Every structure is written in C-alpha cells, then in structure tokens.
Length: 114
Image (cartoon, rainbow, N blue to C red):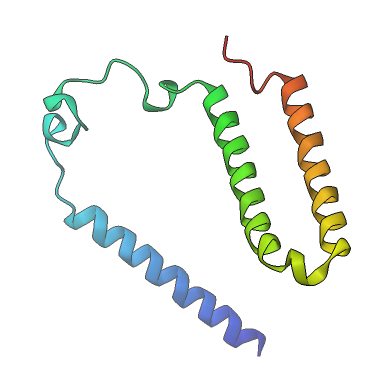
C-alpha cells in the first residue's frame, strides 16, 4: 500500500512538472506595452497595492460585520412573535456583543478618518 501512494505522488509530480515545462516552451510572450493594465500602455506610476490606505480595509471589515449582523436579524424578526421573550433576550445579547465590538473599533481608531 505504501508503494502505491509513492507511485501516485510521483505521477502527480511528473504531471505538474510536464505541464510547467509545456507552458514554458509554448507560451507566447506579450509585448510589454500591450500587457500593461489601463492607461493605454503607459508605465504605472505607483504599485497597484499602494493606492488604497489600510483604513479602507478596516472600514470594509466593519461593513461586513454589520452586514452579517443583518443576516442574523432578518430571520429573528420573522420568528420573534413565535418564540417570545427567549428570542428577545437572545437578540439583545447578540446586539450587546456587536455594541462591544463597535466600542472597541472606535477606541482603536478604526472609525477615525483624519
């Protein structure tokens, strides 16, 4: 059984190496002016990842957190009348946790834009 696994791993490595070598041998290299993105072939003035400040990623994470919160609140609104006080207490515990997260983000400066 051990020899079968080694043989299968060897076949997988040979397939990957063969595909890599075939790509290197057959790939057509594009001219540098036509493969640059945007701006009609002008060389880029800055790195693609340096255009966005890190605070935008924090804002995106906060948005996603509140978006997920809404995903939990919509079904809750449908069944709150059936479940009664139990559903109400559970939602206030959940909202309390979200409120603590907002206070923490505020304290860390994630909501500051200056």
